[in-house]
Length: 299
Image (cartoon, rainbow, N blue to C red; front, side):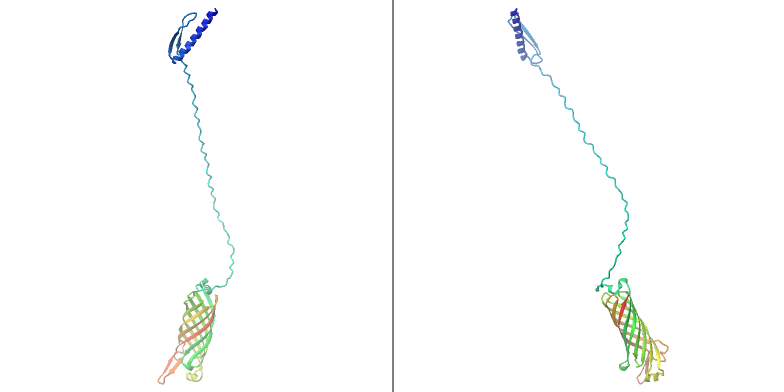
């Protein structure tokens, strides 16, 4: 019995061994048959191999990784600040009071400041001493002296209107005592008003009244002691005005005049009489020159 069992075990082992060997030679999925002679108790043994060979490993399915969707960041909308409209306010600033400090006047050759023409006008009042000369030669020449007052209205740097009133005293052409009061209206033209020393021209008209005291032979010839004369005439001349300060100046001028009598005794009592031995000539027209030196205050 023990022998039979041992023989069976050997037979099974051989069969398994042969099956394993055959399985190694049979490709996978094929049907292979094999026979092997075994010596044992039962004689011959055999085996059949189906789908022998090395088993093909089962495919491993790896689940692909799930895609990771990264959500892009959402845009952040920042609301722009609303414009703030500020209504402008009018601010009134009161100007401080300005105090003007008087400064010394600087005189220049290009400024009218010193004659007060910043106001576009200036009025001056002045006084003068004057001399008058006219008539013949020698003892017959008139030499009168006098004084007067004047007013000048400087309404433009180059122009001024002048009014004068004077008084002269002395002896006239005939050697008689005379007192005379002239009044004139003149237009003055300043040639260089931007300078302190100004040159001006004079052109005007005037009236004059004279009172004459006849003396000696002239009183006998005329048959009277006194007479009154009235004159009308024109004058022209040149002068200088030195503007010392803005409000004060000195002036001097010379004026040539020509005039004629206009009173009622022109025909009956002529002023000038001349006899050449044949005839006697008379006239009431005279010419002469006056000179003035004075001061002017402007306001």
